[in-house]
Amino acid sequence: MATPSTQYMMQAGLAAGMTDTQGMHSPHPKPVDPHLSDPVNMLPPDLTPDSKSRIALHGVGGKDVLVPYLSIGAWLWGDKAIFNHNPTRDLPRIHAAWAKLKSVGLTFVDTAQSYGDGESELICGTLFRDMPRDSFVVQTKWLSTPDMTNTLMQAGGPKSKLKDSLIRLNLDYVDIYLVHGPIHPSKISTVAKGMADCVESGMARAVGVANYDTKEMIKMADELAKHDVPLSVCQCKYSVVRRLPEVSGMIRECKKRSICFQGFASLAEGRISGKYSRFNEPQRRRRFSSHPIHLLEPTINVLKSIAENRHVPVPAVALNYSINKGVLPLVGVRDAGQAEQDMQALGWRLTEDEMKQIEAVSLQGSRSSFMQHVVNGGREPMVSLADLTQSSSHHICSSHIILPPDGEYCVLRGIYDIVLIASCNVTLNGIKVSILR
Image 1 (tube, helix red, strand yellow):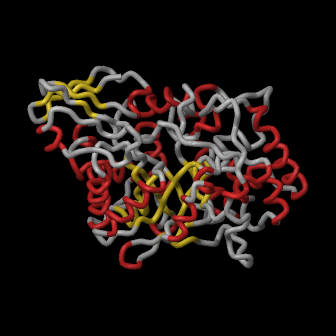
Image 2 (image 1 turned 90 degrees about the vertical axis):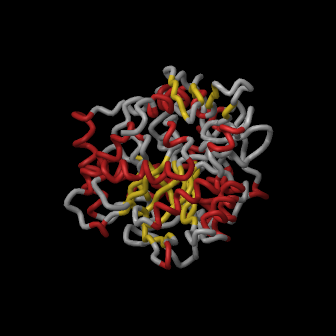
Image 3 (image 1 turned 180 degrees about the vertical axis):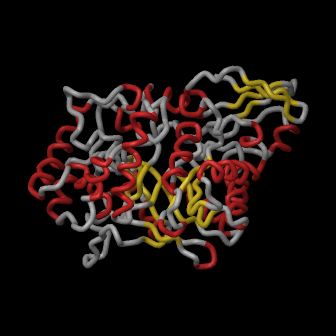
């Protein structure tokens, strides 16, 4: 299983308003500067993706991974801390949703080792049971959690944790394996070696990154190329109310490098689905920000108006917007009703005028320190364990490991600052390591 506290660490941070979309919980959301926008339509004019259409993600040796234009997020499958998963109530709903998605070929699932402390992967494994291996695509993620063998032990962490994922998924390999975030206490070059090992061993067909910024993504792509492994996917939060990856130039860089840009939280965790209002705010445990819904009403009203005119659900409009922008949207699905709504994003395209209406009320968003590493403006993280044991002090990205002069203690900080971790003392190469708040 994943580190038992992982889902509760994430829940505490999100409930506190910590997110990689800081602009969403700013009291003054920032509109998008139209001069920084990409064209309203990034797809070829003669392309209208449907449930049978596929995107080719670059694999090793020209062996591409073919995926639908819509990916299904499985974070809420099994996660009790944030999404209050109840197996008795939720498993039948998940299976019903999967049956509907499977019937039209939308079988691209995104999960992670940290989702529900591995429970999400277990649930996915039950869904894949008795399905031909080439009839679905699964993507999971490696998170550098406070587990000393995973966090500090050089390039072996990704492969070691992927072995555990494959057991939970009951598979021989995953199609896509992502680094969950740039909080790893190792250099990007070291992590790239670990991810390349996963591909070379046949445990993953393609690899990518999540929550990286553009410079980090480029660095990872360059390091993977040294092992003849392409960077296939870059996953970041993207929606009508969080267009930062577009205005920052990340999506353009992905297109230039033939990297698939995957946007998660395409409905802003339900905030632009039409479900919530100023009279029905999201629960704090999964609101993902303290941004009041009434500030999103101009955006939601435009989405609702277009949805009514087209006779489709509001989520379908928001997802179709992302697809038109050249983004592969990722959306969480709780039940068959949500699956039905999301499926209606395919088979049609918003007009240029409708796209402009949406963009006029869209928001930019910004980055915060959650799932990121920044120290003194620096970006290249980490030192090796050997460096750690030989030096008296290190400041390592936002996860900085500090080794006092006496050489007895070091403190790992970063994403783990968001929640008090029960005192965890480990002796590592003669150094007593304490993970503290």
